[in-house]
Image (cartoon, rainbow, N blue to C red; front, side, top):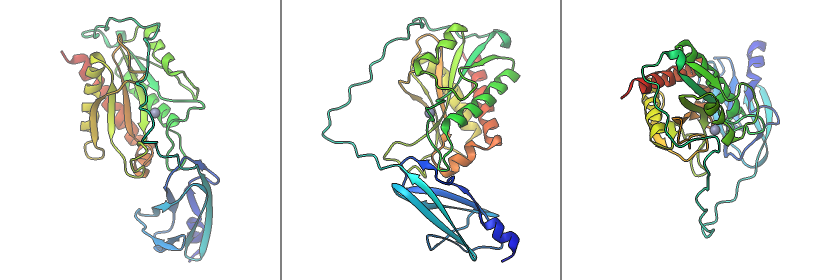
Length: 305
Ligand SMILES: [Zn+2]
């Protein structure tokens, strides 16, 4: 083994040393190695090298401290990270949770706002809401990357895409700050906005396989929100048809979509919890593709009867 390749073999990127991960049963490991090196063992077992010029594999892990040792040629590296304790399974005898109570936002009226059909682009205002922020990280990727940051990045690209089409666009946050959920739509009312779009990346339910769950979906609460949500989800489904399943437009009682007045929806662009989803989410080309699809959907909604 040459010195260069042995050096490359040591470039193991994730999980970050001493990362604290939520409860998972598998962790995604990726490293850079020379093409010539084909035999890589993790915990003494040979693993499949399925990316050219690099390798990636899922490793079984469990709660507590995990040390994963990787051997490439003559070199062994150890990677230590912590996995949170497994959450207790839900008690089947527990009383059913009461449906969530909610009250109308005090700053929000009852009359659905009319669609700004036929208006000049500059007279149309859209609020883009990057989900989570500050201490609320949102979901966490296999490599310990936060949903809040993925949301802000994608939302900024969506903002730029909307601006380039002439629409007036404002964001609920432009930095890594915490915002109260019920306060997010306030900006939409203050600015007399025509639409509110929240940007998120999904995580699976406890009974789904985090390494596999992946699809895109758009959520809304009422009819005016649904029209917007459908238009956006259709364009996203078209644009991503070769790479991601679309679950279309779905109903959800979210604080940010529960808006009687302003058409509101929430986009779950992909699953940040699966290795492939994570890779796609942090790719520039994919971010741009989704931003364009959301803008195309918004344009289609504006034009629809
Ligand atoms: Zn989220």
